[in-house]
Length: 479
Image 1 (cartoon, one colour):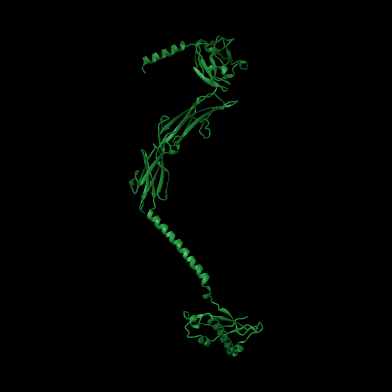
Image 2 (image 1 turned 135 degrees about the horizontal axis):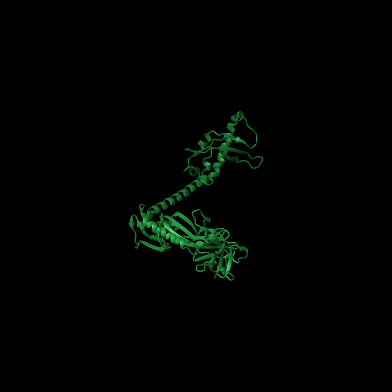
């Protein structure tokens, strides 16, 4: 800067100082929440000759809808207890700062407000040409929600790609209140005032990565004022629109006489669905029937009915796609031949089990007498016994074995051991040896009796025509 420019600037500043006049700076309009407070930002200027009168004892006054001292005075800093409007000048008047706070504003406080300064000596001046308009509202102004994607602001209805970094910013011009207002995101905890928040503005950011689950989700920001008699709130919302590739959400197959499969896909933009059988696209025909159903603006359901026979290598695929990608679901289908073979095998197994069970039952019920390890006991009585006292009963045990025989006489030649139980007497081994011949005669007699009884029904040749000779080893059996 050269000497000429410095001289011009000095003269301008000197003129401004020498020509300084009464002046005031006020906001044109302020909104106050009913039941809350209002802050009026205020600074003033006076003529130079009155600077010495502006001391610590200076007072400030506020007038409503005029500057008449008798009719319009509503606040005087020197007589605060007599004021119709409760408040306090928070600025230092000596420093020409007239910022003021009024409390518990109501609808009857709406109007134009003027400031007046009084100091020592002749300093008395009302700034009648400049005023501030105070408007009292019943509900707080709503906050503003803005959407940022990758740190760039976008409009509400613009689409957000899945995986993008998203930031939702909620901002609100705070009104005077004590305690200060708070912001709430949807159901998240309240976010208190932070160090970065300014006195007149409250800001809260919600940061996350967009997913398909947040498509058409509405995020709401609420500002809350805690007043003496009640809480007052206001809110603003934004609905997120997320674009994402298709996703198969549900699918299954059932098989009876025909094969029926269905497939559901979801994506934004809404996807398309196609069916592929063994790698080839499938369309409606005499063997296949395909139908589609719109589930929502992003969801689609398709079903396919297959009347044709399938082989063990047949595969069915549901394919979905949109502008952001594709997805598919593969179904492994059982062939009709395989199903038939499996059914036949199951039937064969069941029949086999039934046959084995029947054979086992027959074996248990019919054959057990032939497989017993122990002897078979036979009761034989003499033919000549007529009374109980004369009755001679012989218990014998026989092990029957097949053998070729020529006649009944060969049976008499076999050795037999008989335990006589008729008298209940115990025989020693020596006595049994001595009486063996007599007992052989008894066995012969008993055999003859049996033979004669059998001849009445059939002859000896008929009895042994189709069977082998039976011989008996007669063993002792205790009575």
